[in-house]
Length: 271
Image: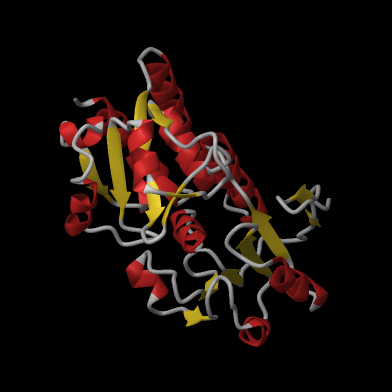
């Protein structure tokens, strides 16, 4: 019996008679997730930005970037599945691959709950259901506990920039925002567009109690903490609660979520 078709984030139904065995990933976090699902051997192509797991990706064919994939190279690999993302990849590239007869599964998790659902869906699409179920057996109870803990406490005001010069941050309709909220943080720019440009004067008026400086997409370093020295009255500056953080647990969907849910609540709660 042919398994029922699954519908991806782009609204396209995907029918696979058998589990794919030649997969191209166009998203770094999904590359890591596919390997965590036991599909490293099936992964035949990755982007130039796919860096984890290092021992796996160093032996895979590179097919360009997320925004400029080499479609000819992808076609030459003859994949039976390409995994893409609405935000990270261009619709015209996905359409071109589909027009060439290549099956594409498109993801778009904007909340932690949707990130968990993505793990389940990707397990179904790739035939890695048992590995996906095992991962979720750990992540789903942890997610529930963290949410319950956050609900019992006052939310901590957080500024999470993603770029400098110009300063950019995250609005409410983003995965990072929902992760912060899940862990007890109140995004000080939740009322703005998805990725607004802001000034440090605006940041100061929002009075964040914690400032988190990730190392991606912009590579914040210790020297950048001095940018906030001109605002000594801001609680995060006054209380020295400006933290350099690994950006991957905040924005990589998949196994990195365990680290975020385990560490971020304490980082926000510690005063």
